[in-house]
Image (tube, rainbow, N blue to C red; front, side, top):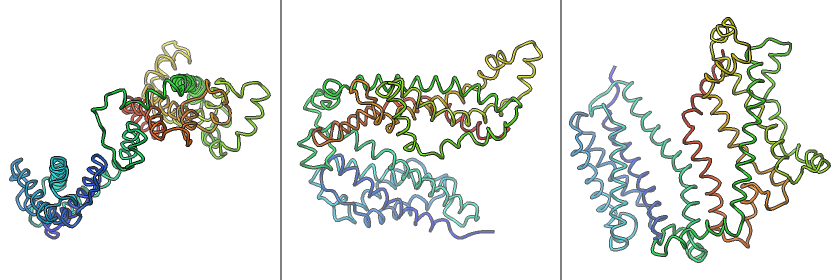
Length: 409
């Protein structure tokens, strides 16, 4: 059964992509230059309509790179003409080269989005399945754009603000342009002062020490516990397996006061050792839950073969189970490290000595009227970059571990 003409649907998506790209490109130009640009939404939608009409009027085989470039040129001309030679709400004489660059970027993003959406689909009547594929591609692309903005925009603003000085931030908070002529020392002044005047070097060391210790302690107890729940038979096994995460039903704020009193009496309140005891108590349950699912996914026949060859249960775990569970161990270690690195409540309540502050506790001290705002942003960047780098490095292990652990054996 045939279903409609896909060409008109592509025109609609051209209007939507044109409006979306014009808004985002203009806002990005505003952030970069500090000039009060205004999105020309109607002109962008019209330009997107023309570009879509030209690009999708041909069959997929005829959409060569030259045709894509021509469609982009049509978008640039249409946006400029429809906006009255003000594609970003300002005359072309204002920030001329910058406007040209951003208009070209807008056109390229629109044309590439349209070409990707209509890939392998012709301008004629298509089956219902192909129409649904086109709609799903648009929804997927739009969702990717929204997700990227939600993740990247705060980080972009945070980095740009950390590289500004107090005078520029107060004069124009939306101006995120950088003056590279001032030199590296002036540009990174906030970061330099954090390490020379605000003890951020010791904060980093304390957070790294506590986080690594939390990972080691968590794995030391979670690995044998998860293996016992997944492989051994004992009374209450099913109840234990299903109730591991019940501890998360108790808000952490409820535990702070009694732990504060106990640690004060034991002399462990203002020490990093106290955090090394508290943090594993909150991470071991989730580590048990994740690891037991992965251990169940490992074929039991492999371990039985090892036992028949004369290996003890501990040797089987060390030589067979753990090597096969490396993706899960890596994902759990990364997850636990992120929890310990970002934890704030217990660090805020237990630590009074500045030399013992963790990174999250030290950043909280920057949130005052006496500290320049760019220092707070620089501290947030310092706290974010190590975890981001670790996550990107171990991302493949994280995905593999979580996926395998979700399958019930």
